[in-house]
Image (cartoon, rainbow over all chains, first blue to last red; front, side, top):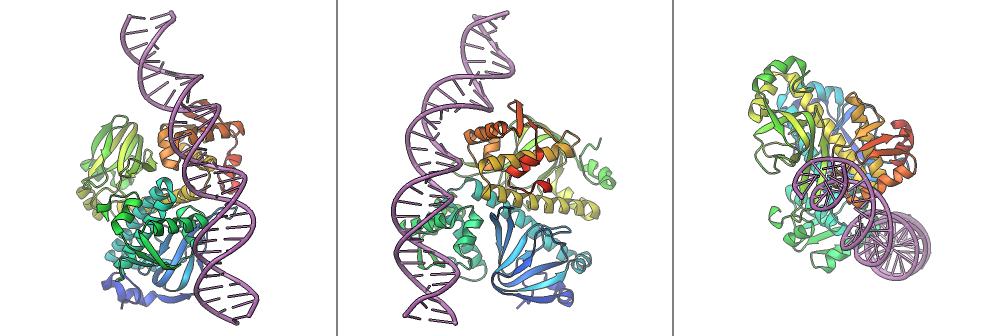
Length: 221
Length: 221
DNA sequence: CGGTACATTGAGAATGCTCAAACTGCGTGG
DNA sequence: CCACGCAGTTTGAGCATTCTCAATGTACCG
């Protein structure tokens, strides 16, 4: 197993040399928006939520990190967002300075991170579409499809999603209240598109119909 | 004047060698989502809207490009979004292949584009906060402050914003209807925060209050 | 066997949307 | 030069949806 998931194989030796491991408990904070970016991270196991707070406490979770994801792509010298563990998590930590030096030394590592940054940008823009133009049930359907695709990519079943985050997290990610999230789950259940054997286990019964509900071209999924 | 705005001075000569100029009429399409990325662009004058469409016609404008902005940062081999001119615009066009080669040759150019990509990522995430957690008047206030900041950066007055886009564009950017956008303008006017001498000229009377309405810390502006 | 945290359901209120009409600025043609 | 039409914006009224507040349900843990 690649201890530090998904970084460039050639450079793994050099990476491991400067890496330290870090464990987080559930809901433990990792970085705070506005703090100097001294370290960057690669998530090994678990899940992180990346979020911004408004002065009055409203929260927008801009995304959830899964193993293989990198924390610090968007930031120059300060973190632009806060990050917390959703469940107990393990990360590889690197000094931001040393990582910068390593990137100069290993162009493929640099290229890899830039690829991930472009990917993150496309994802963020997809999220803008979801937040700005989808109705609640559509938002939830879209979210479940994203989670299912990730599950498949990590070797899981693409019709079975394990929700590591709770309803509050989902609501703060989709721009809804927890009640509306819950009602949206119920609607998808009633329509026969999903099953909820447990509150955080989703079985997708009809991928195509779910995609149609998500306001997408069903063939695009 | 830097013909191709805001690219690295050292590399300007090499850039100009591969560059061609392109003019667009208002509402003329530049690139379509899904098409192969054969060219990238730098906006010289005018304004572009970057957007995604849902199959049923709903539209999310993820951002507006102003002079100096670059089109193609997020894309690998296909455009991930469509782009159209808001007003008559002039751009520098580059072959994507030649630009890639130039990036290898001039590290500072590459670095510059990666910096712009990170910046775009932070902006996209800010937009997620706006779309997910702000009320209509807050969204509009936030949008006006962004435009004002850009106006200032380009040598204009920071309390005077010229809206090049129409209400439909604003609505599709903020996840609202045009009626709600219009009513939000009226509210900001009534509260004495802005004046609208013309439908597309906004005078900001109180920056701090506007920031407060936008759900931000007034000192952060 | 409570107790706690989380999720669901219900009822009423508030908000934003839909549909419709009026208003404004501007260009064209009588 | 004015009338007209057109595109864009604003305003109004009613409706649908989502949010708020409250209660109930459920699973897990000490």
